[in-house]
Length: 168
Image (cartoon, rainbow, N blue to C red):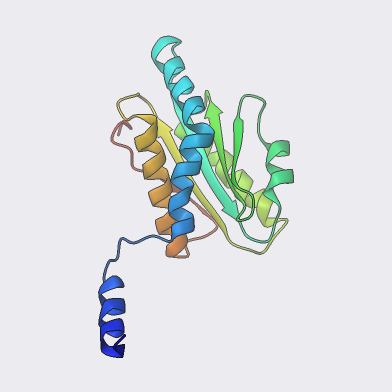
């Protein structure tokens, strides 16, 4: 194949600024499979049992084993999901926790993890106050935000998703 063609092809492929790494995109599939039904159940509780909101924390850390740390730090009512053991990516669904509480919890998690590693920690939180956005949309937005902050190297800080259904 002509080298000029290969160079032009590569240049055109690199033009898209919204392209995400394959491993990061696969988090969506894993999240839907691992926690989609649980999130839908939380939505059921919000609609029928007067739960006020559902909050989630998407978290990853370099050079530390979150598998052993997160179960010790979460509450009994929080639901922990391992999304990618190799890359150390987890989600915690929190019941009966508002955005202020989940932000504080995420900051505590980051501080505790920093005691165990000097590596980067990436953290995205979201709160669903209503079920106007479906579970799939919430997951899509969380993963998109996670990919963007990780790509930008914005580590060791809590970031929020911008859900349409969140009250101002």
